[in-house]
Structure formats: structure tokens, C-alpha cells
Amino acid sequence: MSLPLHERIRREIEADILAGTLPPGARLPTELELMARHGCARMTVSKALSALATAGLVDRRKRAGSFVARPKVHSMVLDIPDLAVEVERRGQRYRYELLHRTVRAADPASPVEAALAGTGELLRIEGVHHADDRPLAVEDRLISLAAVPEIRAVDFGLISPGAWLLGHVPWTEAELRVAAVAAEGEAAARLDRPAGTACLAVERRTWRGADGITWVRQLLSGSDFDLVASFGPTRAG
Amino acid sequence: MSLPLHERIRREIEADILAGTLPPGARLPTELELMARHGCARMTVSKALSALATAGLVDRRKRAGSFVARPKVHSMVLDIPDLAVEVERRGQRYRYELLHRTVRAADPASPVEAALAGTGELLRIEGVHHADDRPLAVEDRLISLAAVPEIRAVDFGLISPGAWLLGHVPWTEAELRVAAVAAEGEAAARLDRPAGTACLAVERRTWRGADGITWVRQLLSGSDFDLVASFGPTRAG
DNA sequence: ATCGCCATAATGTATAGACATTAGTTCAGG
DNA sequence: CCTGAACTAATGTCTATACATTATGGCGAT
Image (cartoon, each protein chain N blue to C red):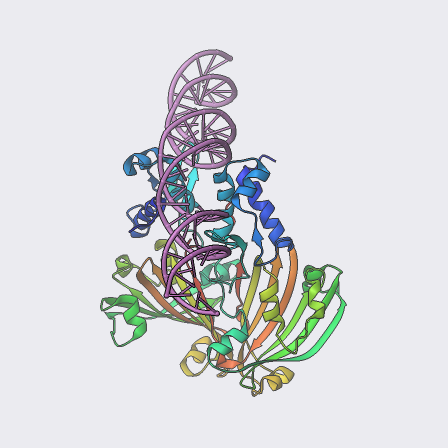
């Protein structure tokens, strides 16, 4: 291990954040404490913390200290993080309708499930997102219970799984796949649209470090939604 | 301007890169030269250069110096950079068919055109992307001639505008909008698909610094294409 | 109670130096 | 001509210190 010291410190803190030892909002040690713990100069720990800050993992506030960043509203990432937020920003009332909820073991024969949870347990959730009681999207979701055990106790009559995860589980990597499909059969019925309506099919997987967290497939009703993404140099600001 | 010194240095260099004064591959001044020029300590210029390095704008090599990074294949961004690359990766033959090409002044009444080129001249290009002579996507594109004057001379019978731009003009900011639409009329005919086929409508704008470069709207044929995006922490390394 | 002021604890910036590491360059010896 | 060893110029890391900045928590006066 001949990694630079500031890098080792950075990783140590990052690991604690990703493992959940340091939950979102937690205050992390001051630079003084860290420099005492590692027996190094302040600039060294400062460098580690600055790197975490520009990576968006922590927020630093003068006088107050450094805090684990709340799972960001996916700052510059694709903009459909949370349908609830989007709907309410339009001034509509949001509602999540839970259709099914099951716990079962991951099927090793399914690549998606195996990649997500190995042979561990999965929570499968199906539901519909509504805006002003009009269906907007149907959602089929798998969550690895090994990665997010607390989710067993959550009541998804009150909050959608996406919103809950966004607020409670920071992710570090995500993959998103978007395609256009024609809504058919049951899905079309649930969206209250004629069969053949062009819809966006969004499939997303998220990880925290090496552990899979969730897999979602959403079918977004017709022309009700755009996906928007902006990219730019990571502005430290 | 009470910006920190390292930030001012950073911006100065960044501006030179974006303006093209420092072209890709150019070597930039050594830390010693920069600290002499700004009358500051080495750590200060080092901080500026490190920030540029983690932002991917420059590469730093010991003994050799710091160099402007070559226009990266904007790695972690949405993956439809170049349809030609994608098509050939599937082992199909790619062809771009040019339909129209006109030069005209931007219409100040059109928000898109005004934002792109103010009142300057625009190059408008319409064309179709083919894979093995099957139409894949129709494309409607506007390019600001003020931002990219060299493009007047390019023959788009040989290369698609997207591929040419990707290889010649580094962009710094992009916005992308994706929706599902049903192909109708002329567009459906050009894609050789029945009317009503679900297609992906992708609209993209790119900037270099504050200057608009191009606006594109592509209609991607049915289920032929997925858009894939991966996101993760900006790993320095 | 509420408002405003102030001390203070934390981060932010910067300096001047030291030594480590790496990779071009040069030059000697085959 | 080629190879490898030594040199050296550049970045990479780290220390110790100083002062700047700022939000917060407490205290005092309204």
C-alpha cells in the first residue's frame, strides 16, 4: 500500500459513507481530529475532504464542520429521479399506488437478479405513479434486501420506493437505459392509454460501491414526460 | 473579484483552453513558470492544475509537464455520441444520407435559433442515418457558423455532421432531452416504418463555454436503439 | 421572548520549504 | 547502432505555519 496518505484517508471516509457507518447528514470528524488520528498535517486531511466534497459525497460548512451529503437530487444526472418531485413541481398532486409486494430469493438463472443480489433475498414491488389521479407511469422494481435491510419495514402506501430509496440510500453508480416502446395489454390498461401508445421505457440499476441496490423498469406514459440531462465540467462551487 | 488565487489561475487556463488558444495536446507552462508569472507559491498553481486535471481538461505527466487533454470521448455521458461508431460496432455498414443543406441567418423569433447563434448565420442540415441501408434515424441539425466557421467546407456526403463535430469541436456543456413519440407522415416514411411506430425523439444542444455550437433533433427508429447512460463518482485515476 | 452583536470554532486560502517519484535525455560502453 | 546507466526536470506528496472567512451559538439589551 503505497497510496498517498490523503488518498488513504479519503478512501477510509468514503468507505464509511458507502457502508452506512456514516449515514447521510452525519457530521464527520473535524480536520483537527483527523490530523490527530492520522498524525499528519492539516493540509493533508483537508485535501482528502476537499476531494470528497468535489465528488459530492460530503458538504463542508465553515464553522459547522463537514457532513455526509444527503443523497443529492442527482445533481447533473438524468432528470427523472423522483417522479413525485417532478409532479409536484408542476402543481399536480402525486400519489403512488402499490400493486404487489413480495419477498423472495433472487433467481440465479436471471442475470438481472443474480447481478443485483447474488442468491440473497429480493423485495419485488410493482406500482403505479399518478398525477392528479391520472396514471403517469407503471413501475416494476427489485431491491436487494441484503443491501437495504431497513426497507422491509417501509409502508409503500405512503411513499414510493424510489422516493424512499433516494432519501435513505446514497448510490455511487447508476446505469440507465432508455427506449421507446408501444404500450400493450396490461401496461396500457394501467396507464389508461390505448394500446400502441408510444411510451418511454426506462430501466435503471444502481449500486453502492460493488453492491447492487435496486433495479427498476418504468414505463412512462406517452408524451407526458421528457427526460432531460445536462452535462458539463464538474464545477466546484 | 475576490476569487481565490488558485481559482483565478484555474479559470485563466480554462479560458485559454476553451477559446482554443491552447489547443488539445499543447503543453502548458510548468508550475515554476506559472508561479513566477503570478508571483505565488507552487502549491497554489498546483492546486489550479490539479483541479483542471480532475475535471479532465488537462493531463499531467511527471518530468514532461501538463498538457491540454485531447477531446475525450466524453466517457460517462449519454451514449449516442456518434451513430456511426455504434452501427459499426454492431458489424453493420454505416451510411449518412444528406437531404438538405442550407445557410441562412438565425431567426430571432425562434428561441432555439436565437439561443444558438444570436442573429448570426446558421447551417441547417437534414439527413438520414442508415445501417446496412436500412434507415435508422432522421436528423435535423442547426450549427452556428460563428462558432464553427470551418464547417462550411465540409462535404457531408462523406461524413455525418455529428461525427465531424465530435472530432473537431470540443464541447463543454450539453443538454439532452429524450421523449417517446409516434412516427408520423414524412418522418415515418423516411424511416421506412408504419405511421404510429414508437420512436425515440432526442434533442440535444451543445455549447463551448458560453457559445452555442449545435442543436440537433433526431428521431431514432423504433426499437432499434437504446440509449444508455452510466454515472459514477468522478474517479481521479 | 426577540433582536442584534460578538466571540469562536471550524473550514478556506496561501506560503516556503523538503523530499519522493517518475520519465525524458544524454552519454558511455558495448 | 543499440543498450543501459546516470542525470535531471518536472510533477506528487507532505509539513508547519499564518491569516482570512464565515456561520453558529450564546449573551446581552431591548
